[in-house]
Image (cartoon, rainbow, N blue to C red; front, side, top):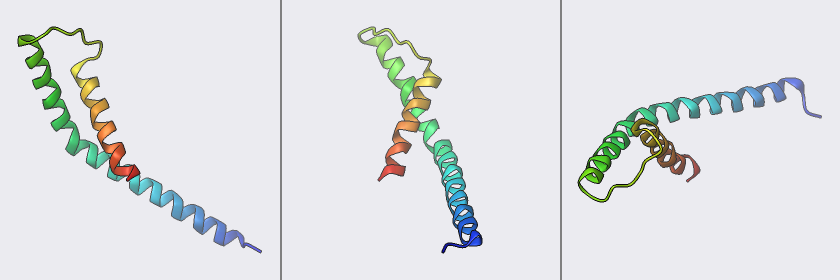
Length: 77
């Protein structure tokens, strides 16, 4: 028979693990986002002098999506 305190401890431990992963994700995002933002801006500057392609996203949204995509690999590895 599983005691209530054991279940509560397991729930508390899982909650703490998820919270620590969220904090880690935020910190990594703050490290990766500036790099992604600069590469997005440089890529758009390169497009000015090259072939013109229509962009539907802002540079901020594109960089944010790139940063989250890159961080996804870190958490699923």
